[in-house]
Image (tube, rainbow, N blue to C red; front, side, top):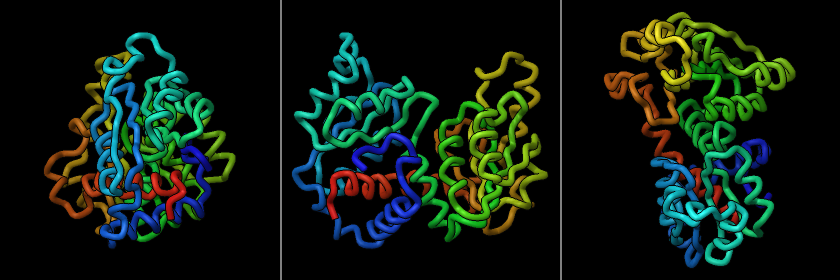
Length: 304
């Protein structure tokens, strides 16, 4: 495997190995401090990002490498009309590996076809965000101790949330996974995912609008924000927006071992009071993103 464009580019043994390496990095950071000495990561971010870009940069620096790149299209030659393929063919002369975010779905696929160095998709439109999914898998494994035999609640915007779509595609490959889809009907999971992924693979799932009723069953609650701009009707948004705000009282019915994940940024869908609860692990999740990206960079550069 040269590039990571889609989470399905990785087999389950490859994902398990990346998690194993990430855990070793957490336990023994000093063993990794010079693994990427003299190597350069180019971060080509054609749209803004905080966590993803900074965690890639932190990952490369902690491996002893260097980083170059840009953080928005306006500060690159894309502003002059340069194509993605010309940009990456030029950057290939300066870097050993590229992490790329682009508003257009499929842009990293085009980039990967045009260059000999590894390309990591750091998010392309509403399509894919494989390193966020790896972050989620590492977090679940560290927090709950397993990636099988889980009931996972997905809450909020299931229609447009690329992190949710990628997580479903990754998790259905593990044994005995059940999903509870918690959303307003306007933001239900797309039919193609229900039919092509869940029904086709015979995965158990339930669709509901009630977060409270689902809570006692869950091993994982994956929160996303309900976005006002997705509603045609202001009254529907007002009726539903507070249904999916996670508060300490809603957690009273959850298992003590349940964990709350969120890809961040949050707006108001998780009360800051929840941050004190041991079950809230979204900031630990953000930190895990650095370690799994370190493991991925090593894998794609062929460094043992």
